[in-house]
Length: 364
Ligand code: 5AD
Image (cartoon, rainbow, N blue to C red; front, side):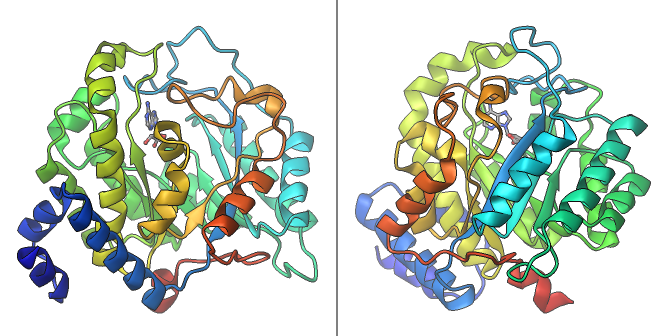
């Protein structure tokens, strides 16, 4: 406890401090870390929770990542791409319900048709969602993977202003073990720098609890977020998907579920303490491990949630990991559920607000 208090009082954490914080196990110590992180959040970005409606508009993917349920070799899902009308309807729903922003996420594709399709959609969303409440239309975050500099630039010029690209892990040899040879760590890094240079608010993150991943790896991940000067963080537990080569880790995963869940919460808290004024998402994967996981993420210092807007009939084909919540085909409005969950923990919601990263705003 004494050591913990000392570390929390420091202005600058060292990597060793971070390892210490991530290794906390006593409930009282974890609670102390949580409440400290919460106060840092309150002082730097306030208690508002911002909503980003998540539209998983295509599950077609050229990649074959060993952990991911929509990898190209998975033949057990039906591949789809939403029509522009369907995407626009989701966007209108978001705007009308005060979400302020959406995330357009898909599997990875780099062909010109797809790139043009995305640009057109961004422009249409922008022009159709302008209103008194949203004079500049919905805020748009893209999450469509590795692209060329020119493509990123096109997306930016079309009107997207935030981009999420997870590094997945900053340990290059672990990165190489979870991806096929055609996906390179250096390329991923390069993409993050392109995005920054173009002027996006850049989000990155990692999976927590990957087989062989160590606490030191996770401390390095947090350190990297700081060095990259990331504006947004989205990270969550790694969860086995049965139709992937990594299903061999099911036993490891089940045995370590609670540990991975707690580590994910500690990662959010330490990210908040280290990075202070960035936006941090409480991800859906947390809720897959524990029904109140997303609320817990918010209590540990996160300030963004992403209600699922993907039309219900497509949801079962966009499952990255087993046990993904909200895929029930009768559940249409994840927003309503999530909003009442946020209200239950007494957090105000930033309706009709882009909820941009304050960290980014201070730099520009
Ligand atoms: N468990 C947890 N997260 C996963 N992702 C992909 N597959 C899994 C999984 N099995 C995450 C990756 C990716 C994001 C869109 O989803 O980190 O960047």
